[in-house]
Image (cartoon, rainbow, N blue to C red):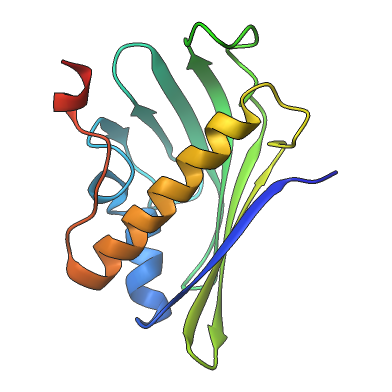
Length: 151
């Protein structure tokens, strides 16, 4: 199975990136963030306007090394998609490791495969938001989805 996967190398330490993945999601992914992602078992919901949401439970946290979320509920109400819930029960795995050039962050979205109806759209979204995370970690200001984008 070819799960979506992408890696980035950061010049910053693992703890700064880990913090971005656990307590600053609204700074790089979407301002429409509810809940908490700082402790195993917590749930959070991200929204991209009124037509798209994803609710996730934190399944695993290994300090400065790994973050795993399982998608409990999701709805992607876009006209080009017939299956608007295909993120449900997928897993999003973030792995951090030391790299000669800094910190390597590897994202694997288990269940987001080329067979998924939203694969192209979601892959493009992941790339955009990973670069937003990179910008946020590097400068303190990311490019998350904003409420203004729903107007």
